[in-house]
Length: 472
Image (cartoon, helix red, strand yellow):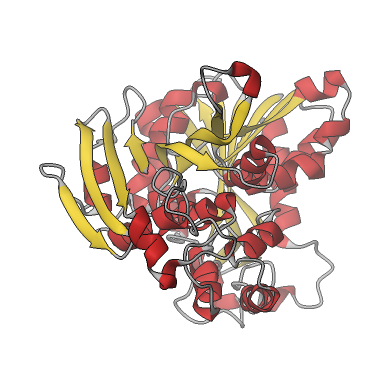
């Protein structure tokens, strides 16, 4: 069985596709073979260049050895015969090979390219044969992979090309494309390949529940098909499913600025900071005369909903790298129930802030509301290029936390940030230094406004920069 992973940056991108070999920690200059309990796994690179790099993982399965070894007897009889589909179909066997051979790449660490280890990358995953046992195969693939941000290409495999009247088999070829961090893509495959096959080639015990929780971190808890995934991955063992669900539920949510309160705000009738921030952004958009707006990093749609209700805004686009967030936004905006004219007015798009996307060009304004602090500092030049040079709107509105204000949150420990996913939080001087330099490089004027509660010494809770094209 085979799987290939391709990294192909867009034309003009500064991303070097050969970084894939460094992230995988597998040398591109030689064939590498790994002995596993189920056979031999081979890693090699069919193509290797800065423009396009592909790595292949080929697993040679010892089908006879599997049948003879009682340890590998499956739970549904698929290994009870010498002739079976295990050497050809992506299943738990390939998942085990992924986990053994590419284990180091399933983490958010890289010595050579630390800035890429957790960054969404333009990936293409190809699996020539997947099983869709006991289900509507096309629908199952969509339900499993679409919520994770993947574009799905499925080609059913005929039962016999010589007899088209026999229709298709229960197997398909699968191609996934999307902007997904490599470690996340590998962990998703590790879990979902056995789910598609609905079978395990080894005995499932409590260790599997721990694996599911660990490999599902960052994507499984909010997956709409989490129950189906848990049941299939854990061989329909109810006790193990309950154990995994309990471990996921036990995770403590991270502290954010929305569940802590600054000292001077206690007893105040002012709305929450998130509301004040959205209102300040809308006021700034109107001051700029921006009727056509892109909300980059729109999340579940809080700002989009406000824009949708205001007739001043004639064209609205929300983008996010998270497919789950886009699904939540679609529900909040009731996109399925809108009239055709309203559907043309507001749309959602899967896109990353750090890669140029011509689909967000031509708008009056781009909003980055609480987005830049989620970007690795080393990737800020890419964000700058994407927004200020690529999209190049007349106005750009950026909001970000003011780190000087953090000491006024009594439940926020000294030196910590407001959210665990923040890569940095700037002081007012640091934010102004970045914004002034960006404005100068791209021909914008910049204005600063405070948002939320304001301290004489620490400044506002949120800081806003309004970029306008010179002379606009």
